[in-house]
Image (tube, rainbow, N blue to C red):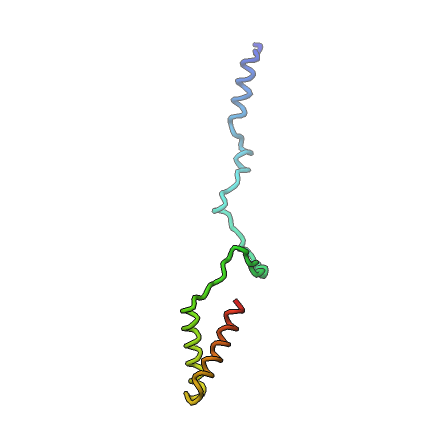
Length: 105
């Protein structure tokens, strides 16, 4: 009985489709079923300070906000002296303090 090329293909493909006993033994288990070693804690690299962007707008203090800041600072200056000093001198010192704070920004 001579095999024709068409029957040879059929027999070759039918034998390849059937898994053998050795093929079943090499099937890997799912990851969830395997024991996974805990990850070691890795020290995080120190973060670099963020570069200032050119598009970041500076905070603008309105004249009303500046006035309130100076008034509050002048109050605290006067409080330190027991409200016995010159209020004008307290105001001038508060203006200088607020101007220094706002110029840093």
